[in-house]
Length: 163
Image 1 (cartoon, rainbow, N blue to C red):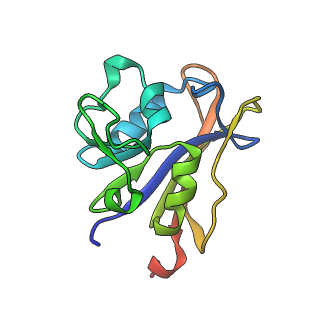
Image 2 (cartoon, rainbow, N blue to C red):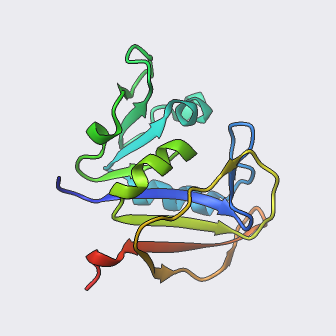
């Protein structure tokens, strides 16, 4: 396997990443960061995450879009449907949700890029538990979004890849 396997998500102070299939805040600066981070790479997402994207943004432009589904006949126009996560984790890959996909990919991840949003929100989808030997290698400054919430971006790397 060559390349970097990354997981990228935004979470509230209380660890929420979603509610009713959507992100419970809007932070344009984080969306721009996501776009820059994943440009030219492969993005991997579960079927529900794919369906949560507004149709005008599907597939995400400038990226190879892989949609993980148990149904090999699932139709994701503009994306490739895959049934096996290991098949998807080749090259430079960014896993972008949802919770079950993050959890399954955590053991293979090299880097985690987590936006902390300074909000406490109710939701039905929690951020994945960071398992394995990861260390914070980058802590962005707290910034205030043009839409109001404070946020910062943390980068975590697997300890055996430091040095």
